[in-house]
Image 1 (cartoon, one colour):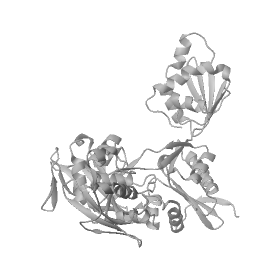
Image 2 (cartoon, chains in turn green, brown):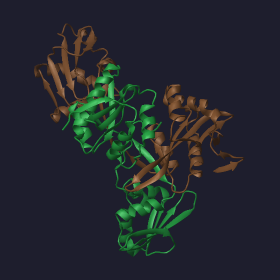
Image 3 (cartoon, helix red, strand yellow):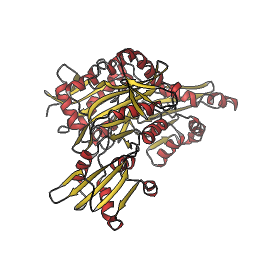
Image 4 (cartoon, helix red, strand yellow):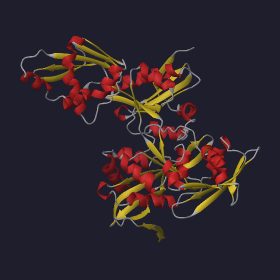
Length: 255
Length: 270
């Protein structure tokens, strides 16, 4: 296997870099695609980057990349998962550290998903300190039917028909009829079903993205179901609505 | 309460701010508000973020005006966003900034309601953590009713020079040298640290004060992993054997130094 070399970005690299970036991060919720144009604007045209885009190659093949921006911030680190990721990231970070010292930065900082063992190993090999990132995002989806369909298709509740009534703050409501059959899950507008689950919009958001409703939601009546003897199926529907993907948004992704 | 009037949108907020779509003439004022809200940023950098961005949408952005002065803005970027496996939606990410003098008057809420009123079918509205945590919680979680999602990111960092360490130690240990000389003629104490995330450094505590250098012979050597240079973090690392100390006969002399570290409100993260 050819050794890894690290060089500066040259025009046209963005095609391959954006492909590697997608392979590295597309599994996470919160992912926004890095098209070659977007990558170039985000990393190359950023005023404070200068010569900071470093590219790792194995022979002729591009296998990783990172951008060293102002104050030692490392943006969009990525490696080809089909290659030796630890070796690629270690080479890139070592080169970034060297460049940061030359440019007079006091520190280097990067963020990576906490379950990415490759990034963790590479950073530990360079004796970088590790700290949990306390960052939150707020997400609301204007029309949830598409999302409901996708989520329920992945973890369907027991067969039958369900009516999900979503109550908005302004007093309006929308109703989704979920039909689960052997063929799959379908979501449509409707008014009758075997199990009716009424839920406030904010509580639905909590179910989807925060792992479920809180005790407070049940006590305050922000979520309720009928008929009472179908409680088990209603609770299974609530459990099926959870989006289980981890969220990760890279550093510097917002303005 | 949002209502349209002659192409503009009025909203009830305690400042009486008028919400209207962003126009080209507003960019200067918007730049000033971003600077007031988030600190100094060069014109070049703002031009990159707003005018040259392939995802910034001026037509979906708005400003809040009080007596013809722009006091807040909602800047939208529109991108595809993955929010569940196999489910990608067009997402409008909003950067909402209100001038510090006009905060807590409902202007952010008015901007949010304006943006929400023009959201398209199936579109997701995403807010990033861009303000103080309590403001963010209030604004997004209570006003918008949208849930907060935790990022699974981890920060990796490494200090490449002793300058930040020196600044930090000078604030937490300003008088330690004088206090020692007051008690009369103790020997200088040299402690070397080799911790993860920080370049190796040596703290020299002498009668005249403290000094920090990159390498030096020391009576006490401290090495290993530590989350931050604070007393509880150091003790935790010591107890879990992630941090080692040699020269233990001098260890008692280390205690006043360690105790000083707890006084600093903002720790230097390793």
